[in-house]
Length: 296
Image (cartoon, rainbow, N blue to C red; front, side, top):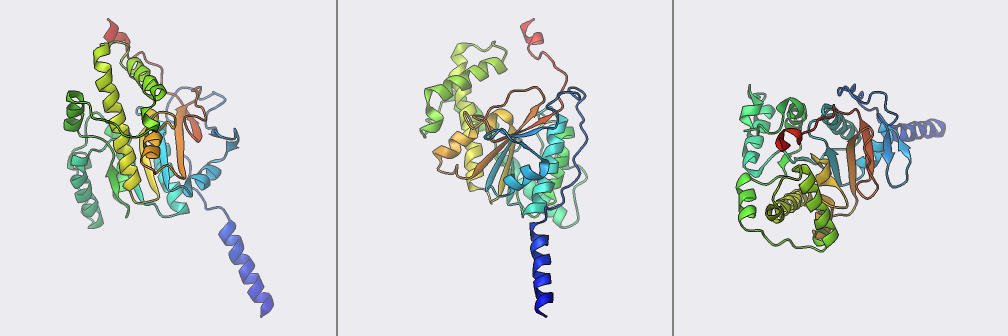
């Protein structure tokens, strides 16, 4: 009897220590950089070690807050986000998912659609039911949103309303917190705003643009601080940078402990340990000069 019991205990221990089987990784969709040496590589930016998808998921699964940065127009980033949701769910229960692409006014519609799914009466047109904003390509975001709406955990907005943005433009609010208010952080953000607007913005508009950027990051941090854990945020890669964005605001809010940052980046990009904890290199979109038409 003792031998049988010891055998059962050994089998149980083996089962508990065996890695959870992950869903199949999606095939690369973006046409460029298929032969790049970094394609598909996952790096721990702190140690320089290369990780397997299993090792990455195991490290992210124990964090109460995970921030995932994307390039908005890269289909591989959205496919990996969906994969990551499923892979993490196989490791532990999810607490919540927050999206930069949702605003507070859409939250009631999100709840209505979730309830409809739970009742087996999903709306025929989810895009319309959510009042989805046309600026976010539903062809890229739809699969992640549809999956999240069918889960028992909440899907939460993490952005500002347009009316809030206009109010910030009109009257720049004070921003509390030492980490997000340093001159180095604000100068780096101002330079990023200049570059992202092709150097065509009048200098007089930059302070208001900076205020919007930082208030948007503060909103994401506040929502992430208050969200059921483990909480996952999907946002643009610049928003999740440890050295400039949401992580600094979490620090100012006293909620930065055990946070992990994963940057999804196109092969050939440079991502440093100051910016995130992990990087996953994907295929690249064809290069396009978005500023050319504006400069004509």
